[in-house]
Every structure is written in structure tokens, then in C-alpha cells.
Length: 251
Image 1 (spheres, rainbow, N blue to C red):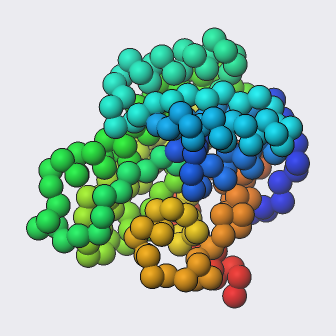
Image 2 (image 1 turned 90 degrees about the horizontal axis):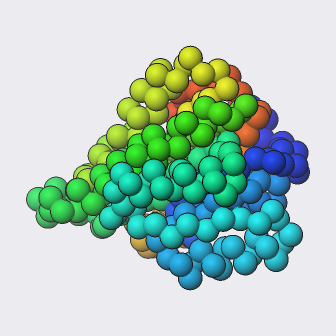
Image 3 (image 1 turned 30 degrees about the vertical axis):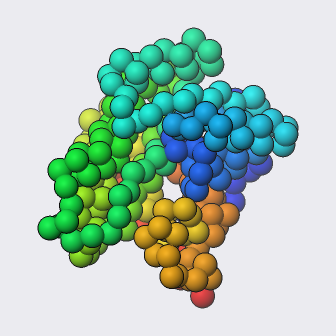
């Protein structure tokens, strides 16, 4: 796999990024725009969306679109309306990067509540399915489309205290492979999952507050991998779950 991505690799492409106001989602949105993509920014915070929108505009990227949507409360009609808006305003969709994530706290199963599990499943598993399903007609119309789920290490390697969060993220493993099998009749459409490993992000700060940042990968090191799986270089690869350890690559 090459991570050398041409500066215009996403020219004329439209890519939807969820969780676009912080962490991996924000960095990915800025990076995609620098590579020519028209980015549809999706997040709950209007102020956060405005800030990323302005950063893209100031850097000279294609005008993005900003969609405030609370995935915890979104219903089927909200996802369908989003797809219709993209069709109406932009005319196409060539990729979805699912970065939005919901995490409560590390705790033993005996302390976790039904509401916590339901909320984490709602955002980490159900919303990626619902959003992808709503946008599927647009993706099938694209000459080259990619869906990429950003996964979580503990979804592959269960560990104490990760309970509802790890379980909800494990649902993406199943979703990735079922979708790939169902979509194998569309050679222009692929779906994969990328598990970044430990990276400098707000969520990592919450789960590992005492960890030195030098012990993690940098978001800039992750971006070439995201671009590969979202862009034309990954054509023909679908249904893969790829786990990274950017720290090992530095050693």
C-alpha cells in the first residue's frame, strides 16, 4: 500500500465527514479539502462547524457544506433529508468518512447503565448504518465511491472497562463485512474500516489522561492512510478491517 497521495487526488469529489469539528474528523476534513475535495461537514456543534468551514475557506479549498445534526437524536427522516440535500446542492457523493464517536467513561460493567449502552450504540453503530443506507443511491451513482468507518482497537481486542463503547464499535466490524458482501455487485463501490490505534485526539485524552503524547501517533501521520482508503488508490479493496500502530512505524 502506498501512502503517497497526489495533491489533487480528490478534485471534483464530494466527501461527507461525520464528527468533523474535532479530532480525527476535523483533521480529515481539512486534509481532504487540501487535496481538492468538496467536504460535507457534519457535527452537532454549529460553532464548531463554522470554525472548520472558515479554516477550509481561508486555506483556499473548495467551498464546503456544513450540516448541523445531532446523531443521538437523528431519526430516519433526518438521514434521508441529508442525502436529498447533498443531491440537490452538490449533485453527487463520492465518499463517507465515519468519524463521529460517543464515549462515556471507562468503568466496570456493573456500573454501566442501559442508557449509556443505548446512546453509544446509537451513535457508534446505528448512525453509521443509517447514514450510509440513506446515501447509498448517491454512492452507487458515483464512478468511484468509498465508505470508510473509523474503528476502535478495543472492538477487536476486548478489555476490562471498555464495555458498551467497545461493544458498540465492534458492531462496525460486522457492518463493514456485511455491506462489502452485499455491495460486491457494484465494483465501483467499496467499504472498509480503519482502526487508527493510539493517536493524539480528544477521545484519547479522555481515556488515557496520564499518557504522554509522544506515546501516540500524530493525526498528520494518520491522514495518508485515510486518503488512501477514501481515494482512487484503494479501488478493488473492500470488506477489509485494517489496524494501524503508528508508533511502530516510527520506531
